[in-house]
Image (cartoon, rainbow, N blue to C red; front, side, top):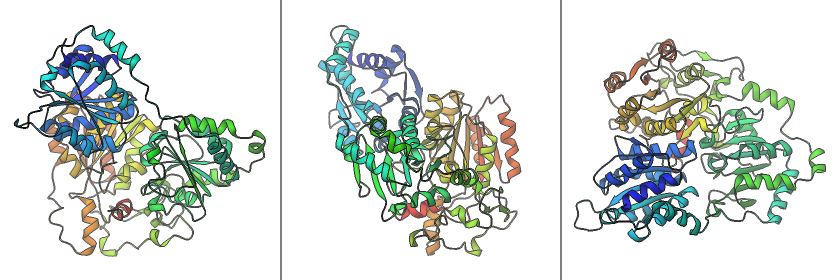
Length: 596
């Protein structure tokens, strides 16, 4: 057995079931070794797509994501996906062939590239190939993205001894990697006192809390906390009466109001960054802030804290619950958790409950559950009784309103229609761009495994690959890719992958024929926009060329074609080219550009 074969066999023995990649001469043998050992190999059309597929697969499956690429350009093509994974702390292992001679056309300093984007580089050696592989996999399991460089001459070197016994020995002899011992008892005592003193506590759970729903719901029940998430953890508290859904730029007016009025905010595995806390405007001047994270380096990075606790989220929640004095909890006033608030959450807790003026028809859309007469509430800025200056809303300029019958569908109307049509057991993956809040805000998901949000690097073009990786991790759910036209065309090669894999995917393109974020950011200043607007493209025809079913949507009635496709047999993926109205920029990107 040679090193390439040993690496493939060892990874499968460690539990790797699926690998993504694009095969070249430098990774041909290690990829075949993975397959020979029993792993499923998914061929992408671009290394960037392969890396993002592995990223999404890891997030949704709980496995280490594995991607395999050629040396040099194979790695550089994968760098954007690798960066997204590293910033998201995705457990991902990238196997790359490597040339070590600077005279080779393929030569680049691959270790330096990995380090530059936040990944950890490891170079395999012939004498410790199995141990190096086990170590790389184990580090990835802790939430690191790892590049395992495989020099070409080393790949061909023989490995002495039996691979199974060497793998067992490596597992036994390598030191355990842990997240640390957790908070000190006095820190837990301080946290307990803060929870008992709070009258309006809110828990905000992030990426690091996605496996801790049971513990957080139980603790919140005992202290009367409301429950919210960052965007990446959307769906974690679905089904709870006290679920506020997403906190931050995507938050409903009611969620914004309640979080701003909290006297204690606890971030669980959540960075509490500018997105989730709206540049800090959701935190009141007298609000106590606690952050719990297993990574000590993440504590207090984005804002001042009253208390920081280093430890596993689920373990800290259990430890805190164990320390609560039952007598104190029994006499505790439940704060926010009142029958009146439960009724408000049922009536106003979803974006679709908030009236808005339809940009396609000019009509006011009102389900009857929202606060009537306040169409501006949609913009997410009118929730507090006394908004701060930063959240003040400017009126929509008359000249930006689209005339009725313009042949474009309001993205809110589109998203609500999709939410009504698509089965509940769905998994939604979104790309980045001006459109991205609409599926996140107006479409429900069944749980935290129903939403995949690869936005840590804010790159467009990752959405379709994200949906593919998620679909393979959760074949029991209908995969839905929500893309902008810019991102869809950037990643269009992976449409062939969707068709080849036979995925029954719904691909929705919010098509405004522009890089909408730039249009709405620079347009109001009178800047020329020729560089960021494009002539109409028939994306439905392009999709049919790849082998998809496809339709164009300009009006709500056109959504009937989706209903027909859903009836079956769903033999081919469906691309929906939705010509969306884009009368003004989205408020979440208005906030985002303030961070540039």
